[in-house]
Length: 311
Image (cartoon, rainbow, N blue to C red; front, side):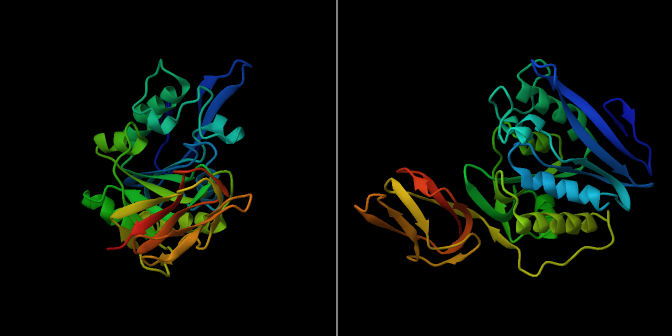
């Protein structure tokens, strides 16, 4: 295997530093990639966090995998990228300095914006090497996501991988245009998206579930010998619904992320901060809270809750 001009032989582990850009201050933007190869050939698995720089739970999942040597496979190869958007990670930002979203910039352009150059590197130097991948994310904009896998479930391989990962929820999720997952699919590669917790906050439950699920998937692929069985069912969500604020005000939730929800159940209130009104929010569906807004200040039309629908 050759990555960015560096050869990694079977049985070797190497750290490859890749320069992506240079800032006006002459500060370089480097991406650190850890590659661990077994002697015996097998699948190549990508574990990547920090595509959105402020989504730190994924970076911590990959870091802990490296720290505990959980990334070293029995067969095949594991490519670990704890932080792809280094600038966003340092400055608590979803984006890169040009204000663009790397995960909406694929397949990228080597002469384009910084986001496009990062996407180009992944498209041309990482995706061709891999067979499978897990792209770790969190909720954004003060919203937390209960641990979940997102994938296109019409692909049977995705169904098998998601079942092996065995997160609390698996969502049937269409491709976002110009995303890593969509581009990898065009190469015939399967990448699952793991969502857990919220941006700029560590969520120990989401981190632990991400690590356990990754090890279960590695065991399914024959890349490790042992993994911890999940203590819950993997619930498949084919449809979801956003609950939105009907009025502007202060949102107080009556439920928690992961809760079971019944139709007509009280979900919370949007209150006038000056005491003028109290607007009740109820559920129109049966399902589960798979995403929850933690920002108490909401405007009319804001998404305040994501419900996985059970018909």
